[in-house]
Image 1 (tube, helix red, strand yellow):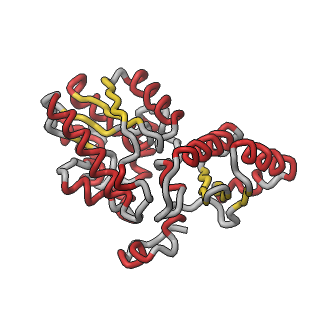
Image 2: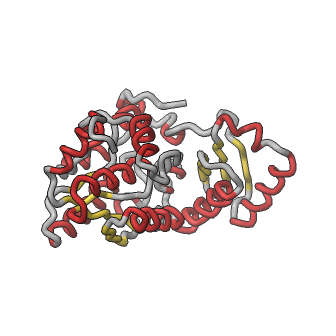
Amino acid sequence: MQKNNNKYQQLIEYLEKLDPCAIAFSGGLDSTFLIAAAQEALGDKMLAITIVSPYIPKWEIEEAKEITKQLKVKHLFIEVSIPIQIRNNPDNRCYLCKKEIFSMILKKCKELNIHNILDGTNADDLNDYRPGMKALKELNILSPLLELDFNKNDIRKYSKKLKLPSWNKPPYACLLSRIPFNTTIAEEELQRIEKAELYLIKSGFKAIRVRSHGTLARIEIDRKLRKKFLKEDFLDEVSKQFKKIGYTFVTFELEGYRIGSMNVGNARIQKSGVRIQH
């Protein structure tokens, strides 16, 4: 990366002061960009930490492994079960989950004598309902992409310049975001969601969500790809495969994929004043 690229250089200079550091790494666009920049700034004085849990798709864990292997970044995994306080998927689930997970990361980093823990929160996250950001603040987790006002477009642009494999990766989120709030979480349902989404991804649809309402699946597809999806033979195959996975009913969201669709109608979220993206 050229030194005259001011915004990226600001990030490098920020990271150089965090010797050593650990980064919560999901394998997604934001955290991949952050570990790549941290590696440039700190070399082997940074560590990527990935959470392994029933609500994180296995294919995402494998992608995270491959990325750190390619970038030659030190990588640590922490296995986590579903925290008891989020078993009923409360609408502040993200806060409770982040508090639990990052407390575990902090504990591990203390053992390793690492005092700077970072995450990939960015400026665009301010436009969505993100109660987890409160937990990050309470635990003094650093979010350099947010502090330096990097948005998704910035991150994609610099990721492409760095030739990172994630530069055009669509946004993902944990599987809990596919289940309605205040619904008991069953690992069997998480497995159904993971299998269903992986089937659609392998069928060529990247920006997708399978919103799961018990044994009813509600498929969200990138709006630009709806026409491609709505082919009669393919619809029959999707229905067949989803029913093999364990769904009784398979439906299609006419509006297509939208961030935070499970937030619609939630009183706490509406009261927060956050705009729900359509």
